[in-house]
Every structure is written in structure tokens, then in C-alpha cells.
Image (cartoon, rainbow, N blue to C red; front, side, top):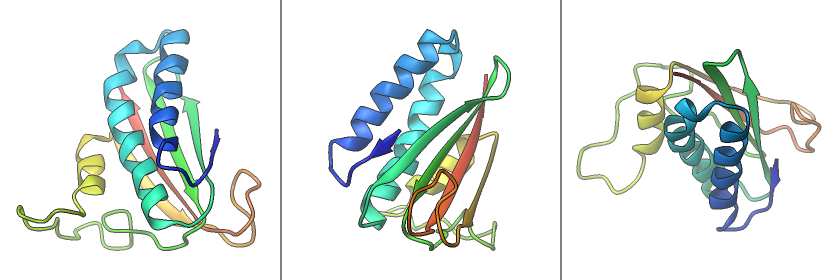
Length: 134
């Protein structure tokens, strides 16, 4: 699903994710997948200046990979090279979302893309992904 640089886009993507998972009898994954996708989508909206993409890939009936591509090539902590990156202090107003993703995801990763995006998008950027398990 390609999304525009619009503040409503992450919400529409989460609604679509819920519908797709329920349609494919994967309702057990909805809550966690929606939480994790929401954080990845918010990160893409806030830290890139163009469209971004959500992709869902079923890996059996109890596993799902959620991927978000955006045009910013910077891999944020904790997805970057140092997996031991420190979470922001408890009083911080920003920066905790991706640490939540790491805590709830069964697996996660991220990598920069050169030239064009993984799904044919222009501009390289990065891909962040998480796996959700029932």
C-alpha cells in the first residue's frame, strides 16, 4: 500500500491492515500488528518527506511480516548497527516508539536501500520490518 505524505495516511493504513488480517483469518495478530505497523508508519511520516509504503506478508497462518519503506536512508536506533542502543529517558516526549516495536516484535530489522526502493519506489531510502507471531 503506497501512502502519501499526509497525517491521515497512517490511520488509513492501520484500518487496511485490520481488514486484511481479519479477511485472511489472522485476527489473532491484529492488535500487535496494528501497534507495530502504527509505530513504523508514524516514523516514516515524521522522518521522511515523501510517500512511503506498507507491505504485509503472511508467513504461515500464525506469522506476519510488516515492512515499511520510506525515502529517508537513516536507520534509527534501535534498528541500526548497535542493537544495545539506549531507550530515551522516561520523561522524554519522543523516541520511545521504535523501542516499543522491538519489545513487542518477534523479530525485526532494517536496512538502507540504494537507487530504488525494494518495491520499485524511487529514491532508495530504507526498509524497516518486524515479524508478528500469534
